[in-house]
Image 1 (tube, helix red, strand yellow):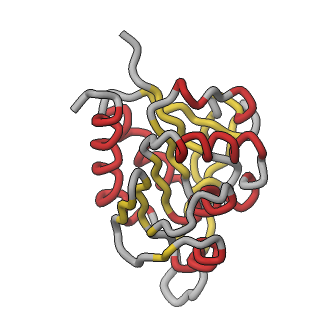
Image 2 (cartoon, helix red, strand yellow):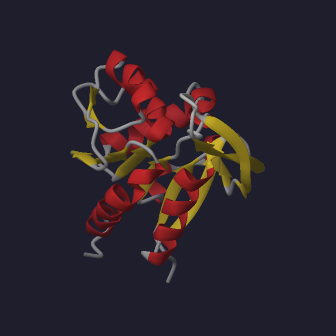
Length: 189
């Protein structure tokens, strides 16, 4: 029997921990994580951290990850949920019309959605955050609020079927409730 599939949205400069933590947790939970990006190719991930004495984020190259599917090929009804990874990628991929179509479909069909860090830029650009409470990295508070969302500075924010955290440091707080919602959504729980 095939496992339910869940999309993980990436692009070049996707944050490594933001991406790999949910990827492996989905496998542990009995799901097939499907990496989706603008093109079906290998993407360079990055590591983000504020170094001691710095006031801004330092970026290093992380692992790379292969996209299983490109946005244009995605039939959202084939997937149980969607995860918007952080890093710099969301800023560059958020104008992709297929990604926006997919994002709106998941929201409108009340499928479990999750976002971390800069991942908020995708649902914000898709126009689905109006009145929605979400966590994100503080520097993306403006992106969320200018699109009508409500910034919450907590490690796990759940509003309707959106699960969010500020950075990968919050993954241990919001990923498990999201996976539990996926279980409920597919009738597993």
